[in-house]
Length: 227
Image 1 (cartoon, rainbow, N blue to C red):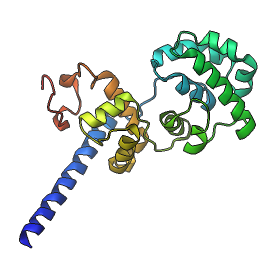
Image 2: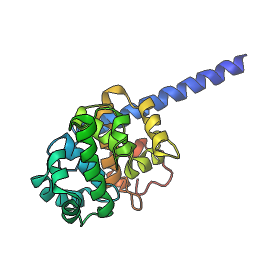
Image 3: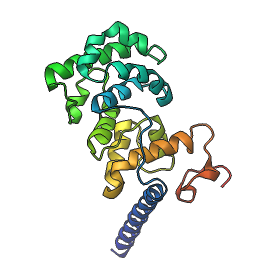
């Protein structure tokens, strides 16, 4: 019985230590960058949705270059539908998969008009029902446009969360659910921004900049460099 109690106490201490570590990680991110912003340019919730759809397998900078001209003439579903697929395709042809994306953008605009009174829906299910909108895209829109405490898992966040580690998982959805369970509520609104930016600029895939890392002492990755 005593052994069981000791094991239980040890397990509880480990859980407490992990919770404290997670809180400290996000406290540091928040202290350095209290109000992180996504790097996609947009004018309203509709153009945000379009920009995130276009950003799949493309850089934010590349998407911003293409959408500058697109959003100047089509910043509502009605204007995008009137512009038409051929014209949309021409304006975004510098983005990867531009043909399929142009088709999706026009069709999602059509569906927004027909099904949602031209408004961007505010539920994960409704957003995911639109062409070209997956779980990550839906979570980005819910977070940025509507202030929902969601976790949008892209390749950067997936890598960082598994590497540090925070929440581990073999799929983006598993990592998303794991993070929702452990990130303190006061940090949830901005959590995915901090982790995405950290993965994009510091905890990079091939050459992580560990000496510049704000949380290097809290990172358990065994392959840290220069620390």
